[in-house]
Length: 334
Ligand code: NAD
Image 1 (cartoon, rainbow, N blue to C red):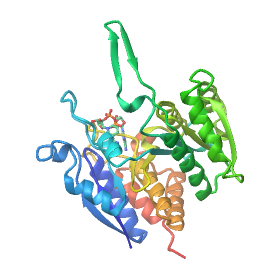
Image 2 (image 1 turned 90 degrees about the horizontal axis):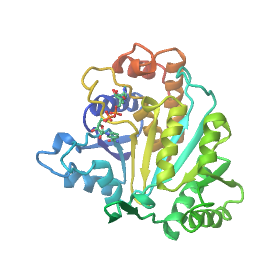
Image 3 (image 1 turned 90 degrees about the vertical axis):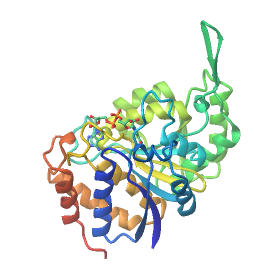
Image 4 (image 1 turned 180 degrees about the vertical axis):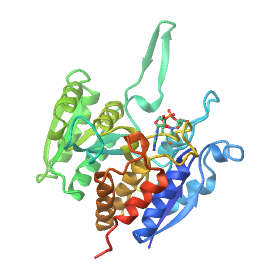
């Protein structure tokens, strides 16, 4: 039995988390959930939005599945996600973008994974005004940070049987910073001769992603380009309702959907649990339950092929109907 921390979060979080738990129960996944809280629902008692015992449980059990949490606006309050990412040193943000049947988009065969460096680059919040009219921000790229994200991308490619890893950068302009990122990438690539390595400038990457996304496999990027290109890639396969993600460090990994807590539809029973379910697939791969992942994924794909979808994808199914349809399509373990 694996022990995984479950944080249901705010808004639609509990609805979509319950859907995933129900599917895992039906599929007899060998996971015991350790339920902990975070988000707006605990903010009265815990001003950071993360109770100490939640952080401790994530550190102890190493793996968590998290629903979205609401960030209060205008209170100077830090997002729960930023706090988790920084305090647990979750340096890799991994976001697969894969075409799904029945989800209408311009392309049918997208199957790529974005590996975004999650800590460095311009995200250190180091900026200041030189004068009232001149503002300056620091772009920080380090050798250890670049080596570990490149290593993560190649190791993940190896584990998932991927063939190509591409570094995306702007080293023609940012010669020292992105130049270092690229240099480190090729140093690491030498240790993975079975995987094809290449690089592409970020603007060209964007153009090719929206014209010929099928050619891409694994992409590894510094933080800012990764932030933008991962949303672009999510758009290629159907957007928020189907965009999963994982924040991963050497010790701890937290998997969650890209979308937020959707307060506009919370409590109506219409939320799409697909993005969190896809995030749970990443989690299953991370802990080595590859066959279990494949079995549940097959049931999800058959559900979508049969035209059973939630409203955000143009269907009529309520969350519980969609969840039950997946459960009905689960094959017994061999
Ligand atoms: P959002 O992603 O919550 O919602 C944007 C739109 O997409 C809404 O119309 C919503 O109804 C719809 N939507 C999102 N997920 C859906 C789903 N699973 N099924 C059906 N429809 C879905 O973005 P927002 O409204 O800008 O943010 C709401 C709150 O979530 C904010 O407090 C924000 O800070 C927070 N947030 C949290 C996370 C996280 O915890 N990972 C990520 C992004 C935003």
